[in-house]
Image 1 (cartoon, rainbow, N blue to C red):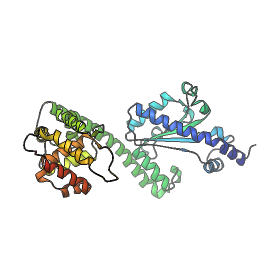
Image 2 (cartoon, one colour):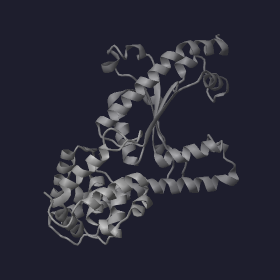
Image 3 (spheres, one colour):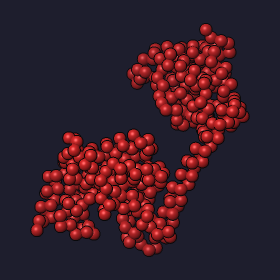
Image 4 (cartoon, one colour):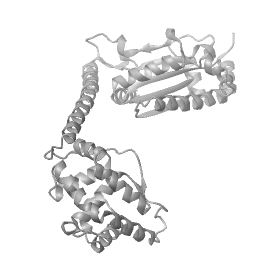
Length: 365
């Protein structure tokens, strides 16, 4: 019978190929998930270390006569998503794109009894399918297996924290602490359901607001949802983007609710613009001087000699709406107001200098 040392030496010899397989599989998963437009929080991967291989072989709960053939997790990939239905979507992808070893795969969400709470995750042990293993770049990995785990962010938090506490199995948890840990697990499970509900309600609200915008209702309160829906649909945004690009700026896509939206909403509230109709009026009245404004801003930007200044200036459409709003309400804003929003002082001074030089009250030629 081969010794632990023999198996360990053989794994050390094979490990470079296993590591290469891990990298290829991770890249493939990332591509497949992106192609299906499934949003995910992150993808983690690892190739089992030689020490970990030896330890599992010697101290694991299973007896490994042929550990290189029996261990299914020499390559491990973890996909962390936001919602439980994303777990289902990734699971369908894995089943469609790989040969799944059903005997060694498990959906731990299905193994818990209704009254039980604890670690939840979906584990798939996979081979590269014949349709892909015939390709030159995959042929070397035909005999290799990998374990792919799929879990939500909250399920990942539970697993990470309980592992940090050294409770790798339910049986390891002292009885005095089990109730508290299971209560926490129940809260995280409820959190997964509630986050999915919030997402669905946000989507429904977006549709409702979008319908109101199409109907021309001016008194829709401005928040991140209504602001996004309005800017995505407004003809004023399209015109603004044209002026910005003509001035030499770059537009980054897509239009999303990031920091630019938050800053824009903050400025709008500070100057008293609280409805979609109010913002629409501001953008319409700004059309007459917007083209010259962005042209002057780019000319001023090109004079900057700061070594950290990028060669080109690219930002989201919402950022350029923010610049337009600042220009429109220049008499109500100052450099210190922009610095309070985490603008650099020099950038704030540059913007206010350009704003001051533009006549925002009459048409600019």
